[in-house]
Image 1 (cartoon, rainbow, N blue to C red):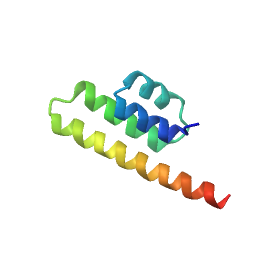
Image 2 (cartoon, rainbow, N blue to C red):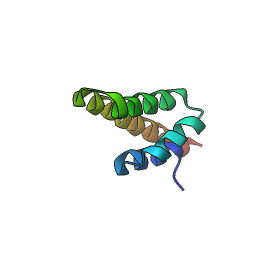
Image 3 (cartoon, rainbow, N blue to C red):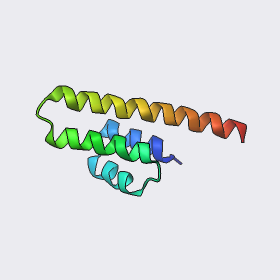
Length: 77
């Protein structure tokens, strides 16, 4: 079963913006919530495509970090 970070990554990679938005509303991780919010706002409203790419990359970077930390934490439990 996927944790919320893996699920968010799945949504981003497959362009499931509605599911990503729903995850944003449900998550208790404030950083994840903000990263998703900024990406979706840029995706729908940014004039410059570079802004969309930057927020996409930031979200992917955070998800990669969060997945890594979660895996490390689960090894020590």
